[in-house]
Length: 80
Image (tube, rainbow, N blue to C red):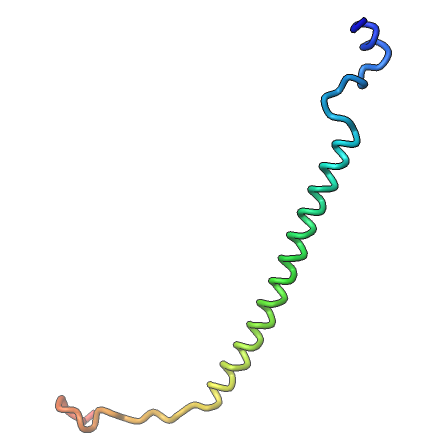
């Protein structure tokens, strides 16, 4: 009986059916799609935060204070 089955339909005795393979592929595609969306979202948030930090850095650079020599009264000398 088994040789007759193999000669007529060699792919009917398979361990994994075609619908199982499609189901697994759909799950894998959904999983990696979620990872891709989360990565793009994280990249957008990091870019936005970087722009805010650049803006703060520019504001601090504009508020540059003049250097005040604090060593004048120091006991090691102020004759620099």
